[in-house]
Length: 375
Image 1: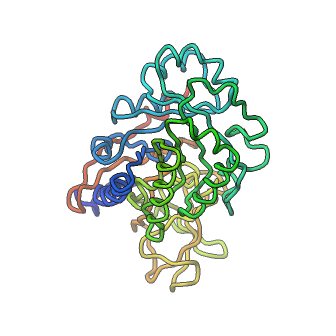
Image 2: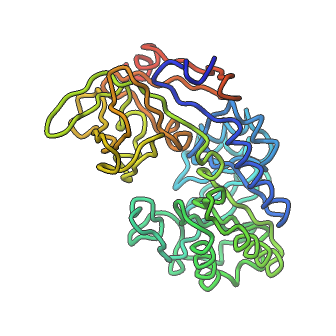
Image 3: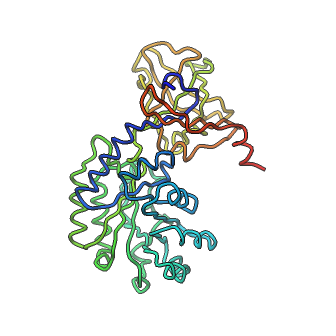
């Protein structure tokens, strides 16, 4: 099926853009000897796992279900971190995970008999207490009162027996400079323990595949760490894997007027692109500009009953009409993994685009998907 003929709404994964990102990430691995994992919390389209597994070293998960998905469909290494684990879930994780990262020493000790018996490589998540976030406070694990990671004041070196590594994750859509500063902060607080470690995991939030990302600075840091501490270095980006590798196609259902022209679309910010309301985030829209930049300005909204379900104000060179199709860009990440069926909104289909003339509909959703989530 051609891209122009796809039904709406639908998410489209651009296979060629995905490969371009993966080649960049593999280059970092090849030049530094580090291992890069897919953070499934950002992108879990497992139809692409056979492709991604040709380039990356494994997956990382935020809980049992993601870990199972990575184990079953990706192969290679399976890592997991969660703020806390349930007993029955941990027994399952112990059977499928190579690495398990604990958020506290109490969790480490609670499950010590299990992970030692299963010969799992375990680590502790540390909190460098070094914030680099601006405008993304909801994603700042170093904020005051954060539950994520052990601070220096709460660190218990007496409990490090058989602990192989340390993990921190503090970034969100950031360049390598913030990682470098964060690592030196972590090194200042915890560096004495790195000498006895087997691995260090620098977490995610690295926008490695973004055009302005300083890859050389990242590689220099990785090499410095490996040479100084003789450890395996892990990175676990999610967004960088599928950055700018997806679209969300929508149709204009109606146009209403209240101070400005408002497009009613067959998608929803609340349901299909939640980061628009949570971050907030302005998704790029093909052939559009900022409000007032081009001749025709419209407010883009959805057909849910939520008054605030608004995507944003965009402008266009040409007048928009009912039935026109709009294409949101950079919609592979944090979309399919976060969408929901509020208001009974249908979930967009999932499409894998091999080329513009060869699009494969991987998944269609129906009323049954809405019903089966309820009781």
